[in-house]
Image (cartoon, rainbow, N blue to C red; front, side, top):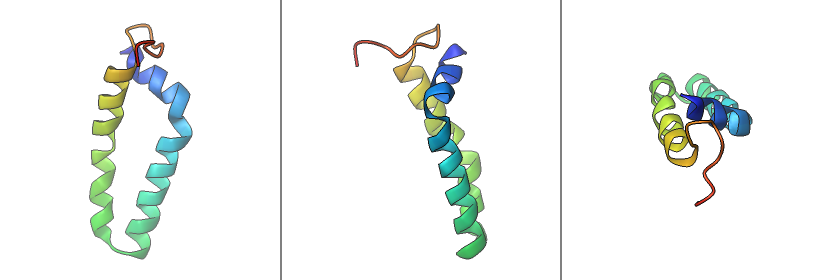
Length: 62
């Protein structure tokens, strides 16, 4: 589970930006965009497990 912590350590500002943009779009355009919030953990976990090793360090072979 250190992969999730490693990705969060390196890209926390991107994920906060995605969340903020989703909320802004939901408020201004329509409530449909609130459905994107539960979808954000899926790409987060995908990138965490593919780009980081068990210790939370970025894999060197990428």
